[in-house]
Image (cartoon, rainbow, N blue to C red; front, top):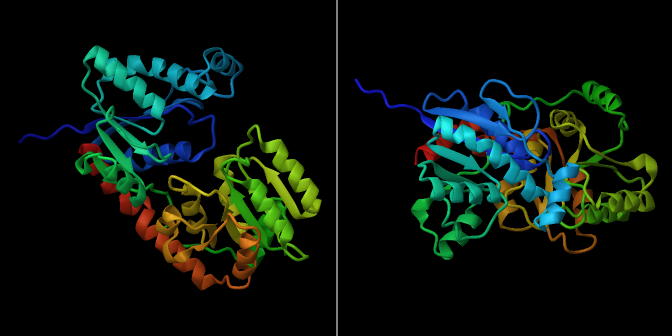
Length: 371
């Protein structure tokens, strides 16, 4: 009897271990979800943290490293580009030694370099691109493309990309099959531990602390429009060049005891989801918006700009409006804070679990990698 060998997969992400973004958290969860699948022989390669079984940390110049920043300025390509180039240089010996069947990646520069290397050396690995950014077609250098939302698949097909070269497989998320809601006492205790007010409604946003994409300035201005006593605004995310302006605006428009902006470790974010009352993401465009899945997995009502991606991800459980308009989010916050109840929390949790949990999507990922 012939037993087919498992597909050997390299799962690669240069920022994992150093950067707290959707790409990085997805990559780690993807490895955790698929590493026990008998049809796959999967190894994770990351840019930071400790190496352990089937998880290998590669030497590189991280994007916030002084050498990476210097080389990025010297070349005119930026520190993120330098991070990816140096990461791939450390990856090449592993490719040569282990001969993977598939290399699965989310960073476009990594895919481009690996395409050039394959062309030069004649190696036979396939390049599977997870288009969570998203990047626009053409995708001629990559063998297969994972589209995480229907609108991206539609745009690629309309641009001439073959349908058979793509798979519509949304991002997965690790979550319990049953929602656990904290009792009032447990919630008050956890808020106290997190140094958050006990009885004030909390509006939570999780994302990079910037103006250009996540539009945290709009969020602050909208909360400032709410009548007093306002809810407590909590912003969690990675600090960037624009972050100082966000801090300054918050101090200018909101009472010090009514808002907080901070960076926490990924494993700590769950505590904040459990004690919040509303989740908001004010960006006007996302490739997917994986934080919506996180928030809804804890039953939180999600407020977002109304466009194709949020319509797909949040479906009937979301609260959508035009966040280009002043007052639009403020009105939505007032509406949601008066409507939220435990029954709706269970509906939101179940909607996400049935469509996006790894329990439901694991086989689709295995199939995609075999393709």
